[in-house]
Image (cartoon, rainbow, N blue to C red; front, top):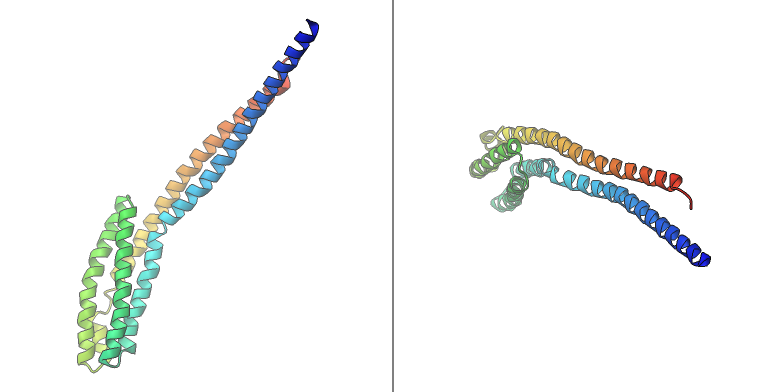
Length: 205
């Protein structure tokens, strides 16, 4: 009888230790999971809010391609070749801007992206007319350049303003993610502390 009670005591104590150890490991896992999830969410947030910054880079490439059309076209064949390169980059920028509208749900940013899309499409017609002037002027770029001078500046300013809005929204979104993760980690730490107190102060049998 005494031996049976002793075995029951050890079984109960072993069960309690296993339970405390499992709970301890569970809350450690929650802390690790919260940190890993936060890192993943911050990366996703960075990718999402990089759309306007990436669009600025692509648009600068488009502007450079237009300069190549003006400066490197000295025949109808070379003009056609350079225009195709410019047109392909223009299409890439247009698609990136529309994708940015699809991915984003911040009204202040979408208003700017919509303005960019409209102005960007209108500029393509102006550039096309400028190529006709370039050919008419025997590929002297001055008049063609003057005909579209400054049309890119409003679009650059729109993207700069949208990028600033994106950075503000990114900071707010990341702040919310960090606060949520910190709250979960703090709750898990409190639970771990309570488990430690239970393990230390539980009555010995």
